[in-house]
Amino acid sequence: MTMTAFVTGASTGFGAAITRRLAADGARVVASARRADLLVKVAADHPGTVHPLELDVRDRTAVEHAIATLPAEFAEIDLLVNNAGVAKGLQPAHDADLDDWDQMLDTNCRGLMYCTRAVLPGMVARGHGHVVNVGSVAGTYPYPGGNVYGATKAFVHQFSQNLRSDLHGTGVRVTCVEPGMCGDTEFSTVRFNGDREKAQAVYAGMRPLGPADIAEAVSWAASLPAHVNINVIELMPVAQSFAPFQVHRN
Ligand code: NDP
Ligand code: 8X3
Image 1 (cartoon, rainbow, N blue to C red):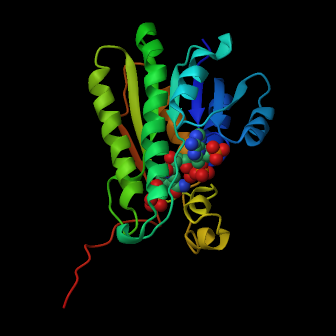
Image 2: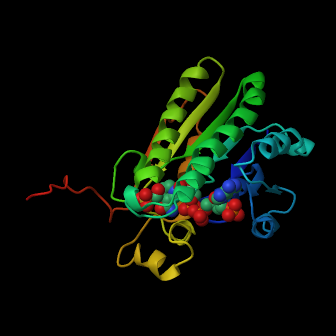
């Protein structure tokens, strides 16, 4: 039977790669994001298989309406990939912009909650389904300027684990994919408000992960037999690792 997936943040980066990969795996995919023109381009490569859907995940009513009014062939979602997310700014907390903090909370936490809440009843009623949430290593390992971004990803991690508890016995699976540095997406350009030079400098002289690596992880977790639940996938480029605690000395 053909699987139906719903991917948020599918206009660029991970979401576009995940959409393409799932379509290549044989799934029908609803590709959603705010920029419809980019979604149409993603869908053009997979006519009839990928359904572009303009959606701002921060708009709770719009999310509920979108999920309730999907075309019949896309209406029964087997796989929800909550990928839409933003990092805004890298200033220390005492200099940060509260609007940036609001946008991260509204997108990375509230948007993910709204999509999950809208899709879960159908999955539970059908006795199967899979929610894949895109977290980050930033939810586990602190770094300077990571303040609210990292906190939103810690939310994504814990919400995913708590969903597993709530969904016990329903047949619905939950996976949190937690990548480290990944290039070839708009992530850092968005973080630095369109400053491409600053964004490119993040990945200078090292090989980051690529969107296809994340799509591979999602495809793998989703393709396992129905009795197997991958709780968390944490992946990093080989070029990224850990450093010791910082110590302030007088
Ligand atoms: P991109 O900026 O390329 O992709 C983000 C996607 O989210 C875009 O498609 C954007 O589309 C969408 N989006 C943003 N806000 C909204 C909104 N309000 N409603 C709907 N869609 C929205 O970055 P990545 O592909 O790198 O990031 C994808 C996810 O991966 C994010 O959750 C990010 O936090 C996470 N991540 C990224 C890492 C990296 O190093 N790149 C590492 C770890 C995690 P549009 O603007 O068209 O709405
Ligand atoms: C993105 C990875 O290290 O830039 O979530 O926060 S990082």
